[in-house]
Structures are given as C-alpha cells and as structure tokens.
Image 1 (cartoon, one colour):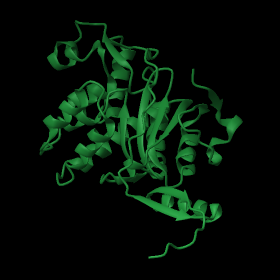
Image 2 (cartoon, rainbow, N blue to C red):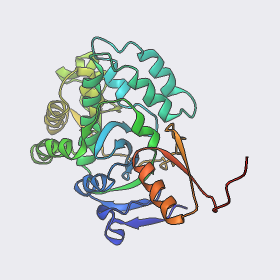
Image 3 (tube, rainbow, N blue to C red):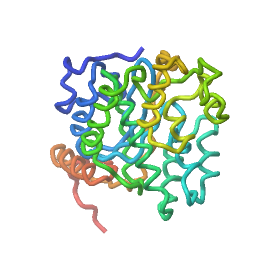
Length: 303
C-alpha cells in the first residue's frame, strides 16, 4: 500500500514532492503552489478526490494537457469532435486512446503532430478550462507526482498554471454563489417530470437519464458549462430534473510508469567524485542523461 503524507506534515509547497507518494489534504490553491515548487521538472501530476481522478501534464510551471479519469485524452477527444475544422488525425488519436494499456507519451506525441491545425490550441484551452474548473470546485484533493523528463520534449503549447487558476477563480465563485442545486460540473442529471415541455425535446431527454455529466450536456448543446448549469439549476427548483450527487470513485489511481528519456546521454570520466557530482547535476539541469564513471589516474600508455 502506498504511504500517504499530509501537505502540512511534509511541506510539499516548499519543494518536497515525493515521487509517486500520495500527498493528502491539498487545497486547489495549494496545488498551484506545489506546481510552482517543481521548478523546471517535467512529468504528470495525478490529482484525485473521493469522486474523481485527473492527470495534469506539466513542464515546470506550465501545463500542456489535462485529462479526466484513467483513460487518456478525456475530455480532449470529446471537445475535438465538435471543433471545425476537425483535427486531421482525430481518428488515429481515438484509436491510440482506446487501445488496451495505451502508452501516454505516444498519445501525447500524436497530439503534438496536430500542431499545424488551427483547431488544436482552442481544443487544448477548452480541455484545460473544464478540468481545472472541476478541480477548483473541490475542497481538498490528494496528489501524486510522477516525474518524466521525456514530457519536456513534447512540442505542445504551454500555459502557466497559476495564471489559468487565477482566471478561473471568478468562475468558481459564480458556481458557489449563484447555484443552489448544482455544485459541481461532473454531477449527473435525472429527468423527473416527463410531461414538462422541455422534456419533449429529444436532445434534452437523451442527456437527462442520469448518465451524462453537466459538462457533457453543455458540449452536446454547444454552450457554456455555467450557462448549462444555471438552466439545470432552475429546472431542479421546479422539480423538472434532479441534480444527482457525485458518486464515490470506484477506481484506485494507477501509478504512471516513467518513460525512458529520449535526451542524449553524456559520459563523464574523472577521478574526482566531487567533479563528477557537479558535472552530473549540470548536465541533468540542461536536459541530458548523465553517465558518470570514476576513473583512477593511471600512467599514459606508451605507443
């Protein structure tokens, strides 16, 4: 069983982020501080609550991609299906994401190959907005950090996480202030009054059977998620629909294996342990793999 530590007990926001170890009691604001403490490190930050799990793909303080659940590219693929012009390799992305035990880095590199499409950046932005809003509306989460220097080689747009989070705070405040029945964008909706006029709309009836989250309903209606939540909140007040509570997660967050780095390896040979240590630290800071060998001094061979 993985050991767990509390945020207060280990001072994670001060720079101690144990690899693969669950850190509990992290507020969304503290999560941003944790990311800032990672410096230039690249990897995946696994964020999980009693109801859900997310993956934040990070390089330093920048975020490249966010995923919801254990399957790669959710909600990226859901967003991509409704964007025009479509991504040229969308079918291949769907195939990669749905294969058994997909390699995340391969999937991320496939997204990077879409960099010439004008649709890629808006899809990534919409994906980040949805996932970060869901996290911002949590009271506390737990996190696990999985460093992976190979992620630093991805040619994807980067957004500073602290800036995105600050921009989301007014939106999160609206959710808490203006909604009575809706508390989270991942809640599902159940139709109660099938005689209501809106229940006669086929699309509305198809997404209010208790299976679709509010974020999915918003995408189906192609409208802002808060506007969708506000309308559903009013329907809940009329007892036309019920806003279902979040279900406890039945999945245990899966550890993420580190991908072998693709950076070149530099071999340093010297008889000084101190110099070897200094060279290794410098090379790794520059993004290289280092192989250090202590070579005792010896007489030069005669030729």
